[in-house]
Length: 271
Image (cartoon, rainbow, N blue to C red; front, side, top):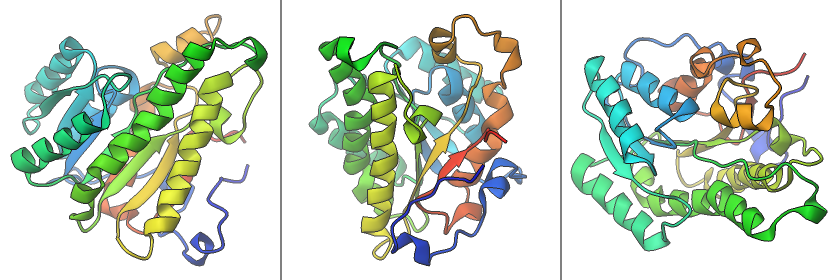
């Protein structure tokens, strides 16, 4: 299977410093994220929780963003209990937060931490699995907002701070149905298509003016609550855990991935 990358002629002038196999199988040094400050959305559960714990284990200061404070507090305690650098809890409901709240968040991060080196956009909702002609329009709008519009808003709000960093990294979360839309996946598939396009456009618009890099990860079928809702008859023990796929996340946040731009990295590519 051929990995998907951006198709623009401008982007194709640059050969990534790592290929997708390198990213998937990244062998991280224990301090590869030391000194970095990384924001993780949807950090209270699933892949976001494990990514936050993993980034902390490799030396990062992790900013935990999510809508459920109790879940974020549990992750906070896990990080501290494991000897990681003191994280921060940033409660925010991406469905309801407006742009001013996101700009205020950027100012808070700047004032409290003085830097932002990376963002993992992991928060998302599934919505309905139903034909588009029957799709509830309110649910459609909610899924598109949380998965795409709020992701754009937060990225834009954080860009001035991220641009102050020499080697900032923004990682969006896509899906196989974003890269290859599938019947009945409705707003979720369309929102992930939008995310891939967003990463591509940001890459094209910034590649000559900043070292900030934008990439997407497609985690593939992973043992999470969202996956269980989408495939209720599936045996979860046949799936990889979030811990099993963390190498790619660490790679794209580390300085080893400098030069990797505009990529959609499938962590579990089909042979």
